[in-house]
Image (tube, rainbow, N blue to C red; front, side):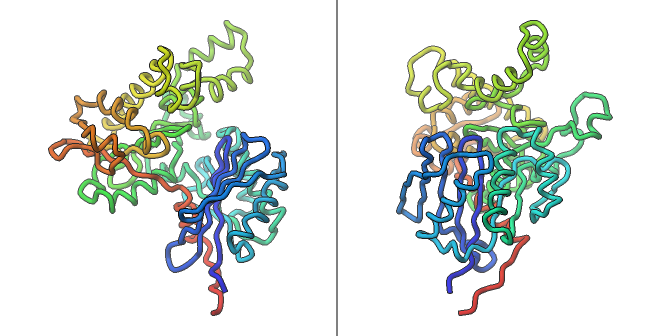
Length: 397
């Protein structure tokens, strides 16, 4: 008989990433990966297994409950993996508030609590809720485990987490939570292999993708992060604004007459690289575009990343290393070069050849600050956390 299989869901605002793992030994072993592109009509499912890949168009359309999409996906996967041996499902859930400090098996009560946090992460949390409910509908008895992005940042002090607002609001949950925690947890562990000389020191990790944030690690523990109460804060992103003077929002609503819905749409969907450039939310498009606005968008992106890095270094009391990760961080040397140029006063220097080649260590030998490029793997963390909660019975041989 085959080993039991764990399926992971990592939902974004426009895609659902899938991971397939064999539950063997202490660490789940990856079998393959997939992604459902919700922006495509018809939907496109792409699956990779080792060096092989396959694409298929799904007949199901996106609905409020996603039942048909997940049902068709599971049926298709059954031809490639032992989905009949599916033992559990792990979910990335963006927001756990102050309710969840680690992975949690999803009970009725847990699901209610996750739904209650939807207003704090309106782009991502609803996707997780729909996926959990879809799996429940299709496989009612299948164990499901939630991994929370916010949990990794629970180690931060109240000094770091507090806004300068009335104390009662902090007690009611209006505070800095931080996100991308699964990615930072993976990088903290990976650093012990990739750079054991500095893994326990003061590191700023830059998770740069469509969503982007920074995290300050000390001894692999989160001490500060750029995102705070919501996924809007911090550095500019593909379509999100990053840190913004709240007076701008008051002005837009009182003086310009914009509705809350219109402001929300602008901040989440029409700002960031897209808003500043007026061209594209994809940094790759902007790098290849000679328009002044494209350059301004990228310049602002790099400047704000460097500015936030310096601020987090202040929390850490110094800076021993920078790690670039996620799609932009791993694959776009022009962005890394621009960020590091702003931080030269902190002793940050890179080797242009190593940077262009996307090598793991891209600083010269005599540099004061290590600079690394490390691929993240949120699905691996989801799988490991799920297995820490759920251990299926091993099949007889």
